[in-house]
Length: 309
Image (cartoon, rainbow, N blue to C red; front, side, top):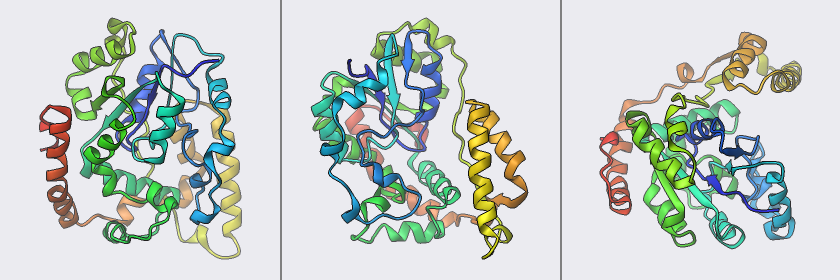
């Protein structure tokens, strides 16, 4: 048994699934079949409903390294997996350093304003978020947020990439980390893919030949009010679970799954973006907020982030 050669470690809603789908097509890469596997984060935190910190179990007592290594036993070549929350979730950094001393990490970053908005709507669609975007941003001022809230509902702070990356570098040497800017990936495909392939020691010509794609576009559906009515909501809850179980067995293709969800459930869902429009003034405030943080990131990476201007 051995550790994976690399992990795509974040950031959420920044293109990590896109990079997963791209590298999965490379003949020299063996990707773990689940597009997100959260071994290094407390599993209780991934519930759809809020969780109190007192209900968290001791991570080290329930996560032997052998269990993780077993995930890659049937894979060959340059083995890897994705967990888009690792960069943000600081308790995982020490665990990664201790258990994976030679593994490399790819980190995908995106314009933090667009990332924050995208994560908000994604969580709204999942049902974890109930507030408006403006109210959700204000909630982050609360110093008593639970670990569950910090993992799923901190949209603004997650975009302070220099802070997260700086903490990551305290445990993982820079030589083992490749930071990719999503906008740069699509603007300079050949150059960036060559760098990624060299970093992973896989054939760069094959990497360049992979067709650019954009995976995991946010699902912006919400149940309509009729389907939430007391007394009948259980019927729709049941159909949600049944239809999803059918869909995941029919296909692994992301686009086909989206189309099937619309066919099975589109008649009682509505657009979350249409229902929860974001005030442009909030976007402007976020742009101003991120300016010094983006400058810090430029210094950390030693490159200009003109794509985010």
